Length: 315
Figure 1 (tube, rainbow, N blue to C red):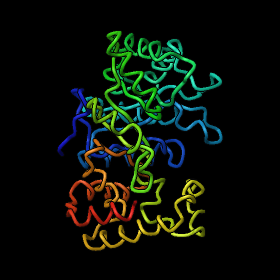
Figure 2 (figure 1 turned 90 degrees about the vertical axis):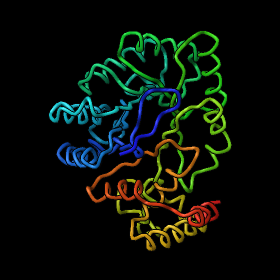
Figure 3 (figure 1 turned 30 degrees about the vertical axis):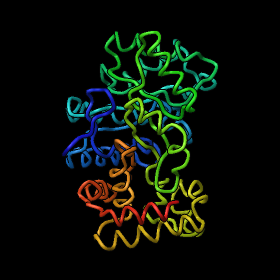
Figure 4 (figure 1 turned 135 degrees about the vertical axis):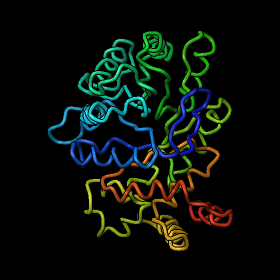
C-alpha cells in the first residue's frame, strides 16, 4: 500500500491511521488484538495513541491503550513494521496539563515501558500548556531525540500563535521542530483548522494527521436523529451534528456511497485523502467491518463532481 510522507520527516505513514483511543475503553484486549491484526493484514502501518487513553473510563488510570498496543506488538513481532504515534501533556495524575521538561521526560519513559519499545516514532504535544515556555518543551524533546527515545515530534490542539511561536523557537535556537500537526478535521468540522493553522502547516511543510475524521461516528451514518444517540458511549458527542447542515452532508454521502457501493465512512475518509491539506486521517474501529471502510476509502476514486458536491454540502 502506498504510504504518505510526513512533512520534512523521513517517516512514511499509512494513508489512514488507526486510532487507539478505543483500546481498553470500548473494546477489550482480545477485541483490540483482532482489530490490530486485521489493520496490518490490510497493509496499514500507523497507529495513534496517547498516554491519557483511556483515563476517563471508570476503573482506568490512563495508559491502557499503550499497554494493549505494546502487548500486541510484542506477541506478533510487528514492531519493525509499525509506526507508533503517541502523545504527552494531558493530565495523567499530575494534576493538570503539563509540558514541563520533567514531565515530558518522565512521561516518555512511562510510554516506552507500556509500549514495550525503545523508540517512539512520532511524539506529540497533546494539548498546550501556556505556563511552560515553548523553548522548555522543545528542549525536552531534544533530549529525548538525542537519547534515541523519540524520532520525530509533532503537536495537537495548539493555537496558531503557539504553533508559530514553537516553529520560530526551533529556528532561532536550533531546537527540534514540529513536523506533524494533529487537528480536529472532517467534513463537518472544517472551519477551525482551515481558517487558523492550515496555512501555517502548508507554509512550513508540516504533515497533517487529522483526528475525529468521522466526527465521532456521525459521518458513518450511524446517527440520524436523537433517537440514535444511545447506540454507543459516543452518542452524546454527536448531538451537535444533528441539524440541517449535518443532514445535507449525510444526504450527499448517502448518494455517493450508494453509487460506488461503499460505506459512508469510506466516502468521508476518501474526501480527506483527496484534500491537499491532509496527509492522513485517523479513524478508530471497534469491529472488523469498520476496517473495510479503510480499504474502501483508499481504493475509492471520487470524481471532481463528487468532491465538489461534498464541498458544497459541508459549507
